[in-house]
Image 1: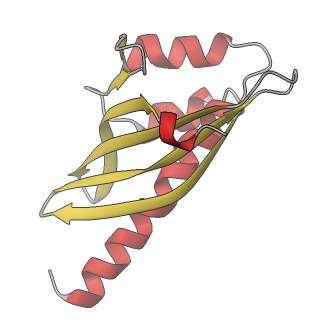
Image 2: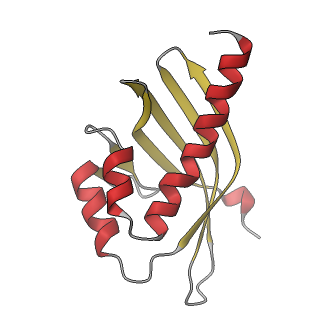
Length: 129
């Protein structure tokens, strides 16, 4: 992959991460269905795992879901596999203290589309105020 293509792919991946998190914050199961790979696994900060169907059903049923703000998103491409990572702040509308995390996502190139198949959220104690 030449430098121009690599830079464009990294930018695309950095832009895809907020699409997923915005869909989660808006109960947008249609976007999640289209975006996520069929074998997607979401690993929560408490180490609980959810496969795609369970994850989407849980997102769709949430009342007043929190906003999910991503910052410092990085992307690295390894052929048909890519890794993104960054900071994730979960902000509740009811005044609860926001949660601060870091996350890692793994994407696979599938018929010309990058689809996340793995997500891991980790507490970021060093980011707490």
